[in-house]
Amino acid sequence: MLLQHFAYYIGQKFSAGYYGVDLFFVISGFLITKILLQQNGSPGKLYLRFLGRRTLRIFPIYYLTLLVLWLVQFPYVREHILYLATYTYNYAVVAHQIPLNHATHFWSLSVEEQFYLFWPWIILGLKKYPVLLKGVLV
Image (cartoon, rainbow, N blue to C red; front, side, top):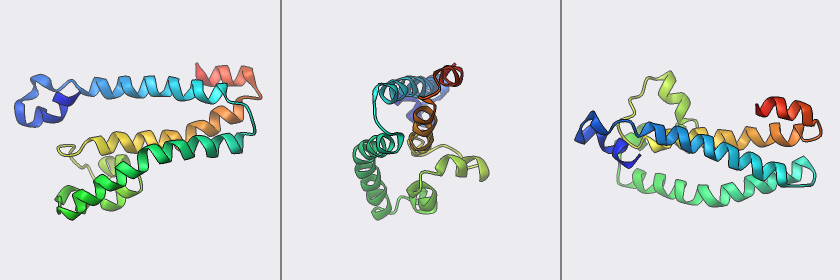
């Protein structure tokens, strides 16, 4: 996956690293679902605890990175700061046809955060309905 980020500079023979991102999304989805299914309690409290842990783990370094890139006047970040700060960069890429030449990891982090926001509600909301939950998971 690391070579994928440099494929722009070293040639396209190392440009299949995006499979690593796909694999990460699949594994992450399974692990998050397993964690959510193993927890007991009210869905609202479980969701807040889940989201709180993810926020403490991801937000500090993410926003520190954005701040540093903003301060060194990295044009890519300055131009798209609103999308980057709100984890909606993946939508901006599609809507504005932004090339993924620099800092492409922000795209996948946007997808990941959106998954963290919505998937727990689906899983926790369906825990009372095991047949429906199994259907959604399949």
